[in-house]
Length: 295
Image 1: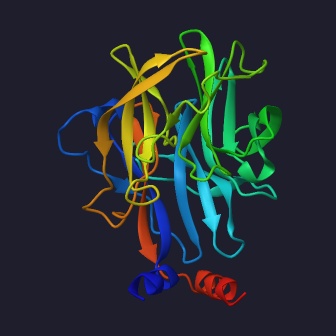
Image 2: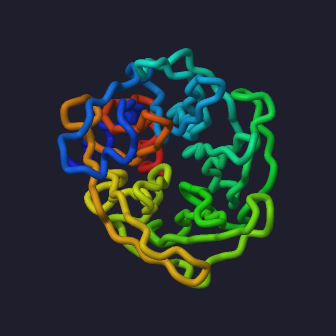
């Protein structure tokens, strides 16, 4: 009864935090860096999955905004001051399907976004046409595949895309694609799914190279969805091989208001962006749950 009451009255309230330290800092064993959190969300909204790029000396942050009133997410944007203070928030991408995890990266002079659009049954690449507000769908990288948390990066002369799959019995099987060119043909890894592990599989931010080694943030959902982030060291990554080992674990910020979860760790220069889960009561969500139970 207590668990049912909690599910009915305590709803997710994710928010975004800024750490003034590079992402490789989280590989260490020292005390976690201080987190500067965005202002509290409005009642019907939460924000999560932050990613950022620097353009003309300004840090631009993009993130999921989930609106309980329409029960789906869209992509918002703000700038970040030198001290980590967020600027004015605006919506920059809103589609008929749920949007989240707006993975950002550069290739040459272009800025790309690969948002999660599993309801469209694809992983599609968007190009900034009027940055930061204008985005145009450029190419569907993976068709007929409800990809979750798609993450694209270039490593050792090859492009890689990693994700999990929404309609798997448990979305904790890792799938990989590769391509010689970002806009070329993407080929599935011969070992797909290359990994099954509830504690260190689902992508959770930007892969990064430190001292010559590739690291990949992944969600630890062994205790709860988005409970923490594990940093995996990638030992083998070829079209036919994949192996990684967990090196470090990043727990939610227990000193702040968002101590119930953490599922994104993304790098932008000397900053690291994270998110954290709090709890709040959303009357509209209570009504939705009660209606679903009645049906």
